[in-house]
Length: 553
Image 1: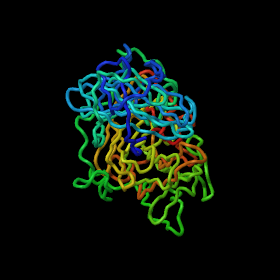
Image 2: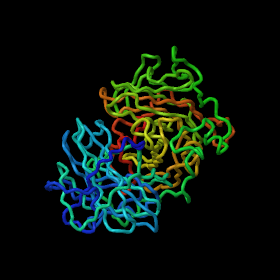
Image 3: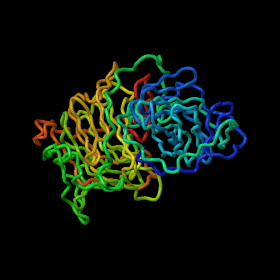
Image 4: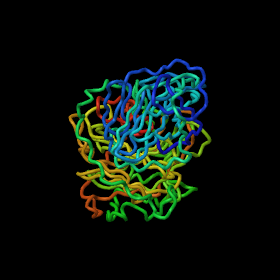
């Protein structure tokens, strides 16, 4: 989870749909002769990434009282060809008691047709556009050039609203080849802000999933599964997760620039008095050297191979996870992603039901170009019973070194599609060292960056899932640099870990009697779970991003 923001594209053309009244034209300029609108006007092909459960009626897609400052949703997918120019757009409205709002349209590109998310190529982002709170419709659109190898565009929108009690709507999607779209002479030009502020830390995301990891709905952007038709819009899907009462605190490291490296002492353990780490589950990685790198301590970690030559299957069959790609040198664990798809992975042998985890890490792209690896920190069900055992991806990004941290927290539920919550915090330079903490109790799940809380969820159970913090058994830490592309064409990458520590919930440091993780356990979701592969089921929140569900798969 994407994020982690990739380099944002700034050139934008946002043009109004013919016949749409009250919409704002963004970007100025005269439209070319309008091509046919190819977007299917079928609201069942729209669905939630984060925020409230949707209502679909009267040609309008609506997420009411989202409870998050970062609501987002997916729109219909589009078949494309490399080199084409496509204008993707829709009309957006935002209402809230107060505050300001912005929206953005993005595209996830795939080299595979709908339903097969093994071919994720990357994401292109449109510019942020101001949306007047309580005002009329604003056209959110951008013209994109289809990258080499892409045959499918999964269109999504992200929003930033300063008031979490917001309601967002979308309608009149408009997709036109060659960027052609007709203008509305009644619209006024409203350029996007020159310097968008960093995304506010979500109070809690709802209806996302790495969202679960990453789902791309078939006929659903971002998810790779078929979208179900929407249930009765007036029917509740279940209890919404309890939302934090206040915005999270200031950026980590008061007095420093956002995104600057955190001091080693800026930890959740120190700030919140977690006590001493559990020795059996923690590793300072204080061994190995540049001239003689070491495998991670095999008494503490399950590795991809028994020796330096050992490898196993990669994430959903993409490339390989190899022992040689996860080594310790000069006190740092290094997961290396190669152009040929070989990458690093390891899973702790220590598992506990309820507890705290914290990892000091950074990531970077070391190659010039190619499909990007996904750095991920997860607590995974020790018995591999997924999705019933839940999955807590407390750091998940679709590219190394992004400037937004992402998280995908999965509900325990008996079968797919994945149901999850998504959080994102921008202004965090992931090329620098930061301390990522996670707390799981019988009452809640919480995430921390450099000692500061940035997400918290509790409850959310309904007839299809247990409460978000109700994972039924022990969980173990995994550290992953996942390949979503295949056996070639990957951008080389590095995911580094200074230390990984585990704490008992009591803070005693003894950890009670947690069960050691099974030696043969892979901690991987099934191959067909790229969270993007699952379509949202009715009103249940589902994550819709391929990057988003790194899971262990």
